[in-house]
Length: 448
Image 1 (cartoon, rainbow, N blue to C red):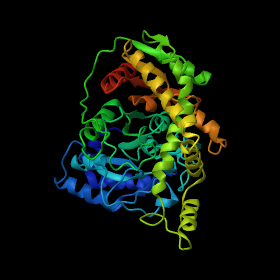
Image 2: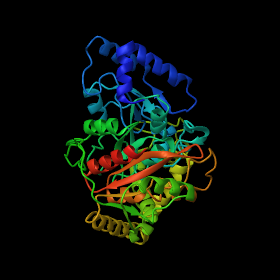
Image 3: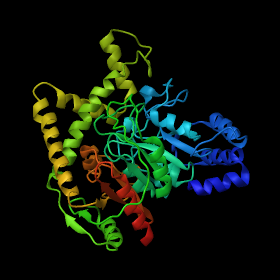
Image 4: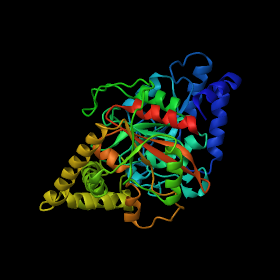
């Protein structure tokens, strides 16, 4: 559902009745896309809207928020047992922006535990099912946010993207999902996985809605030292030169659909040689940062508490062993290893050098091209339980992680179906050139 369609529903039924209908749909849903539904809060705000007390650009519009973005008084779990009872006492910057514009936060969406995964199968609360085929995954880690948009269980949603966590589920569920330039959107209130890579971003059913949500959540926030202070205003821009990254590939059926779309335009194929280092350098950096960030979960100050008290070291080990899932523990151990004495230079510093090569190669490419294009995901959505090997799962991020390493913006747009399943196309822009990406996406829409 688009904003325009929801506004018509508000005119016909009023906000309270519209929200009641939405809550009933969520309750009947088989997707497992929400961890927490804010029923009472949503109905109270809907009543305020009907009485003329709720105003703003998003007044009366239901927005879903990924469950690693803090919300005052609403449980925020990161889909982990270790935070299953955590209720924040402050709002993330993006949540403050939503509330200031009258949005109704309808609930907190399911995800891979701490954002670590490609399928939401690592969630403590169970896998999110794909709205197009309930036997398949919705993608990850922002799978819940993508699924609720695709299934009409929210109008807008927020996700976070560390290595493709917005674009992957957007591709698998057939919606629009944007990973902004690093620093465009404040990370204040985003529970961290890998600080130098992750960004909060918008998810929606059309370009206009996506752009509006990005306008609202972007901008200055002094509480985030990585924030650029820049805002965003949507405007159409001319696209002169398009590059296809030929060493970002996918299954044959996806490539056929990809070129079916791209053959409507003049383009040039290029190869970015440093991308062969992207996947390995990304996982070394991401896991190293994760091992540092997740050291704070000790079972003392907040979150999961084990009643079996003994020595401090035994207690700390027990809490983390019981509170973290298998994939999270795997990444903590690998990250700790990469940062340990004797291996820091061999792995982590080498990964940072590879990251610099990738940044430089993208900068050179954008000296020539307005936008770069590739398939978003190398395969169609997997069957639930199909990916049993962690390395195979990591390889699914091959087309998305280079963007995060370089800090660039990237957008998934739905371009059709293969075997009844959605296919996404990835548009990559230069720093703070989200408008060029969105403008090219509009051009693609005209040929759809």
